[in-house]
Image 1 (cartoon, rainbow, N blue to C red):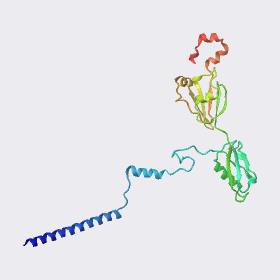
Image 2 (image 1 turned 120 degrees about the vertical axis):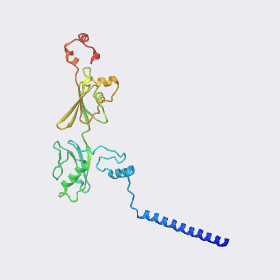
Image 3 (image 1 turned 180 degrees about the vertical axis):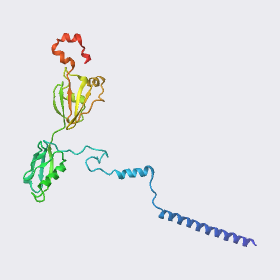
Image 4 (image 1 turned 120 degrees about the horizontal axis):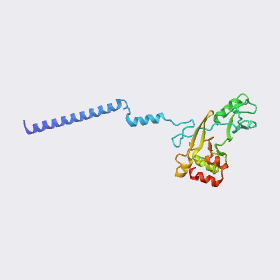
Length: 261
């Protein structure tokens, strides 16, 4: 074997190895590509998949209970009550425009149509009820309903307050603020046993007793209950005030101390 022959053999071997490497690389590339194309989608597991399921399970609410801006809950839609005043506007029949007051029985009396029960309905539900009532009386009735006046949220304060009465509940108000709105305590009030009555339903009322004297003394209103529409706050008379008409002021000072009450 000559050096030239040896050199030629090595070149042939090298060339052959190069061809085999290229073929192996091409086959591996094709196999990987086929695996990507033919393999089924990888199922998501863990936190990412759970997050995707949560997003799919929580679509935007459209029933008046979801807040599209904050992503949380909002107060339910207002429902009509007796003494509310509603205005009806007919686009094609303005002669049927009317302003109605919901009667104590919950009905409103429509012009040239049967009465409609309105109490407890939302404005849209009431509009649909009016539309149904006029179907057959008017051709293609188109009506809009607007709330003109309503019974504003309120609370009632009674007992030993400066100005007992009914007050509008314009914003969040706690029991201490309610007493102040009603004129504050009288000198006969029992600060330590202020009563708060709340209507649970038409047949049930819950009552709570609050020690406002302690709250004011400690300058802490953390336990002061927030009022709800229709609540009743009653400040009772102290035990001293019950016997005070029968005692003179000097005699009263001999038996009790004002700091006890």
